[in-house]
Image (tube, rainbow, N blue to C red):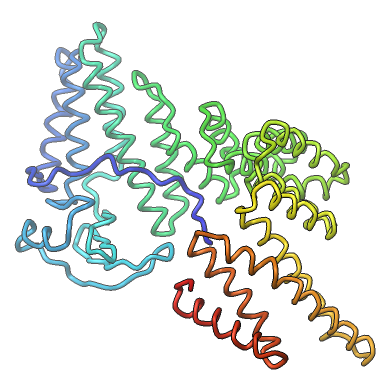
Length: 439
């Protein structure tokens, strides 16, 4: 299953339905008036003056939205927006999802399949740097407020800026503009760290690290991922895996290894960390026994955790140690007879073994050797049947059962002419795969 490794954020900076929104011209006038007041030496010493500047820039930022807001229904917006109609409408696919895109002079709306407005892309902003200007104004308000009487308002303003940067970053990411998304996430992270908020926004910081890593800006990514670790925000271990990869790309092998080992102790089931560790030890030529030593430590803490034996099986499998891998998978089944992954691990091992033998047979020119390889191929394929059948029988997850059925369908198809039972089983699992409904 595809996993988008960006942290999803709750939309915090939403437009209030029915609120009065200034036009672009009125927003500019309001900003200019607030900026003019801030130039007055007497007014410039008052925090309220700078709060006003910040608020007017926020209003200017949201002005292109009109009366729309993320989360609104399409029919609802049709009534609220009145005469404002899109110039064109099209269907687009973003990150594997289908959206209806409505184009307006200063913005684009993206509605999901349920007809809910998921994103607003501003194409003609009132000011290109409205959020940056707003943040500067709130910082100035905090600076001149020696009595800290307006700290609550300043905090609210800065948090609003950070939330809008984060929302915009999500939109840019969905639209495929990694560079712009990275700039927004970085700005959101920095805004949250600004006094008097002075907090780590883990979602913004992780996403800033992830997009930096995606852009191969590994030095910046290290900075953000380290902040995540310090804040105990790990994204199921992905932070450790990505941080290690950054260290590796920067030539810091020692920190790369230490980060993976630290991550493995906290998230031994993380495939990203596990694969990183295996690759590290294989490429470095270090003793891979260290991997099993780490697993043994984890088992001492959780002796009844079947997934640890499954992970051990995966390591042996990656290292080409078939017998040891099968033994570890079987141990997972002994620890927890209802743990389908132990059986799945054995099934996939034999299935992949069969595919390798099939490839070798196709490349073999000697008839005798070819026949021997075909025989071994069929043996491996049949070896996969029992564990897959057991996994299918005990699994309570329909998606997993359909995936297992795909393997069994392919196997039984190969042998359907050899036995009527194989034909029956092929038809059974073909129906499961076709309908997506386990029998």
